[in-house]
Length: 332
Image (cartoon, rainbow, N blue to C red):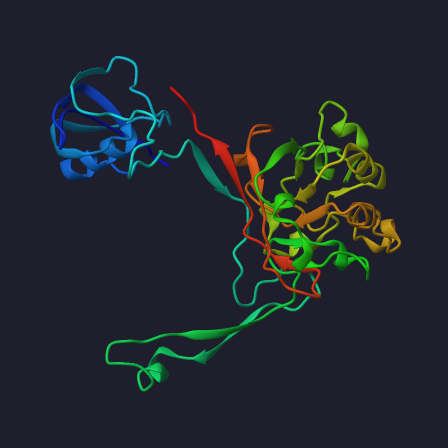
């Protein structure tokens, strides 16, 4: 995706007196066709200014440059302050800190007819109230649509709670948010090592994890299998976490394990015999499992934060999540 930066001069006056001038200021912007007033608002927000009286932006140009994600003035910018008030850290009234991270969506889209796992029913969407029918129920010009979604919990990108495997395990309503939100992400890139066409083994063993301290983390296994999602090839014998690998993660004290493959376990009836050791070990230890992730290649091996939150449903063990990673923005 193309990123843009605005180059401009600006004169900011303050309602309580004084002013601030910038020359050759460079600012990350969401598009390359903004108006001066749009850039003025972004400048005030970026610097955390308060009690602003007016902003004049001149010499405005846009260039295609990577965002630097910095609150401060970029190298080479000149700023002269004449009285007034400038809260550079954004702690004044109305100030808003710019985002210093980018969000990476790690979820597949749920849609009617989607086959997530061979043999499981696809979701269906049926109208309960159509917009046309709602005309008679509301004021003129006011319309609503209400639909019924019918699906199995194992749809799209979903999270398994202990209740999925164990009758006395914690269900979706009992999961602590601290175990689901902003977990330190440890991504393991395994696409080549688990690709049978390249001589790889489908099973992910304990040895993969020996070089890292994984305590409290979300361990995310990038196998590349997500490229097949939605095709018959996705259901073929896929990469999985071995029993030894699962036991190592339990002993390491991880909080969550995710994979972009068909299942965390080997589902091939010939090689697995119906056993599910990864599910059994992880869920018995209270470690959440997220299956059918995607886009893990856009998340760095370390330094990102992972979130995957299902709805708070009592007596239910598995449900789709909107999984995403917060990735530190590149700095110039």
